[in-house]
Image 1 (tube, one colour):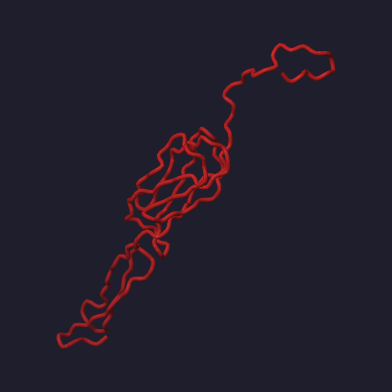
Image 2: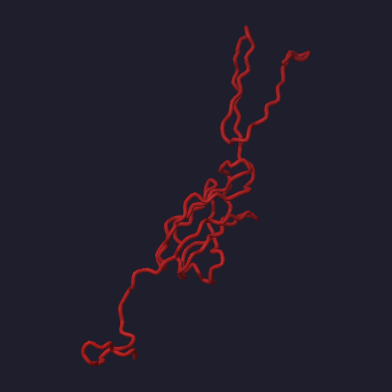
Length: 171
């Protein structure tokens, strides 16, 4: 680039699509201070998608599920590290009250929201929906299964008698 009347040279540099540190080096042969390194940082743009990076395949009803991790991403796939907004989880097409306990809205930390205390009350196959500021992502199917029995009780049929080799009648 040529210099202007004051001896200054100007160059325009456009940051790329990857967030993080970048640098450009300017070199002029024979000048003191050459080469000179210019540094800059590309900051992620606004959140346009959510990426689910961890979610359980199977959950036992009544037990705390393994952590579900959701990342906020910009249009270039960069993690939006400055994002600290709320991310909300719901269960798609599930009966009301599917969460027996747990925090269903989490503030993201450096663009990442972790749901680590969810407890499910209804068995079945469900999909998680995650929402933030008009952006929704749906996770893969999660199978919620019944837990181990807590006790055994007699419902009916106690104290019956019958003929040997014949089944007892249903009460």
